[in-house]
Amino acid sequence: MSTDAQSQLSTEVGARLPESFGRLDPGQLTLLADALRRERESRAAGLNEAAEEALKLVPALARGPVRRILFR
Image (cartoon, rainbow, N blue to C red; front, side):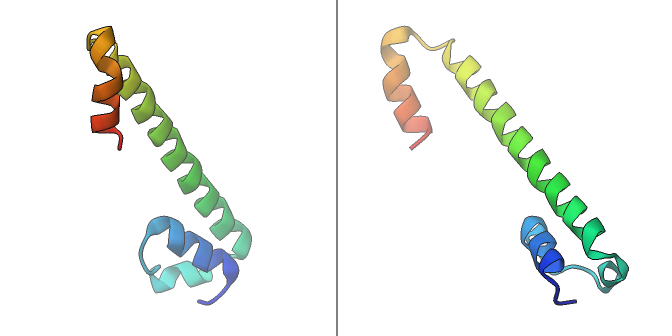
């Protein structure tokens, strides 16, 4: 298990892959890695949107300091 696709997927997962992943072809591994990356990006974007919406509840004059405190 030492292909580029396996190392890419391992990086996305954040752990060593099980041996059974060695039976997948590089195209499948790349597809899985891409799907994980897109999902992580989508969740991050959703969290950012939610945080910005929540900041609308803070009075306008305090938003800048609150944003700096929360998102250093």
